[in-house]
Length: 419
Image 1 (cartoon, rainbow, N blue to C red):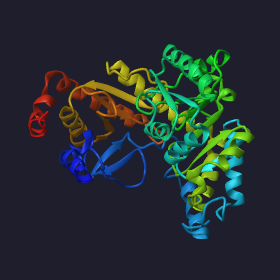
Image 2 (cartoon, rainbow, N blue to C red; image 1 turned 90 degrees about the vertical axis):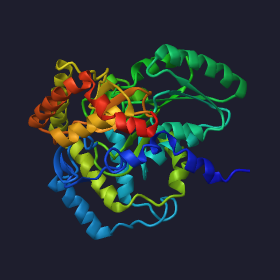
Image 3 (cartoon, rainbow, N blue to C red; image 1 turned 135 degrees about the horizontal axis):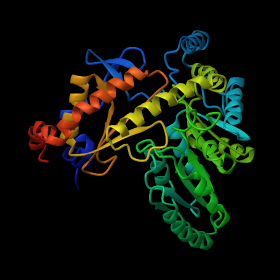
């Protein structure tokens, strides 16, 4: 019998094997200074395109004032215990009511974290006789939630309604045998590609199939729709989303999340969501802070307007210069390139060291082998000057992309890794 750690030490995983070359620079980088459009990286000023602070709330004086006052009044611990036992307050209830109203749902339930929250939600919504059908490009938190499911699950091709319909037919036949139901899971915005989920088309299939729809709208909440209620509002089908999920970690620049649905569903989840039943309540500093942030989302539409001014300037500029940004329909701005992981390292180092541009690099296994994705996240705190400097920087790397400079620079790294 092998020692459990033998495999772990021999195979560090598709990302872990790059640790000695990547850690501290390409992964686990240390951005310093106030959260903003420009921060410091390894002592140098850089334009930051990797902070999910969509509406630019993180460093606003009025936000920091509320956070500071709440910390001074309550500390970091209050309330102690899980919500069901001793961690429940009127402010938690108020935040739930306001979140529900904002996304046009009957009720909401507050979650400590988005990742664990949606995992636990999936686990609570389905039993062993039920069938899950979900988009193959779903976020890791959804995939991990599906892994908890003891019943059958099917994936459909990304945003492919024909594939979804085929799998719904399979799921329907199986559900008729098991006596269970069907849960379809998609995202409001897919965080890598920036594409909105085809929620309108998915909802239309309810006329033919009997299923319930769970939508993870982490990137759509606060950024899409007339009022900021998300992708469902943007596509005119918010009422048809059976369970709506959003996180505070992006547009709200904080920690926490919530689920919203009809009152009966929320009542059920409150008593069956294991990650909340057996975990400490969300501390008051985050609850009071979220109330302030949500109020700003409601009352200051100029924040979203400025965000989209920057989004349009960046995305249109990249397309005009011939860069492939895919079919994004959100703030998420991917730039697709072909190349190896070592080439991606050389390119990103050039951007950071010589042009002062800090954006995230995404490679296999998050995306297919041979593809490099540079993901830019515009925010309301960016300026048009930031956009112009970034477009200039991307233009300057075009020749190096085309003439093989990055490939030659990366050869030593590739040889060392046996690539």
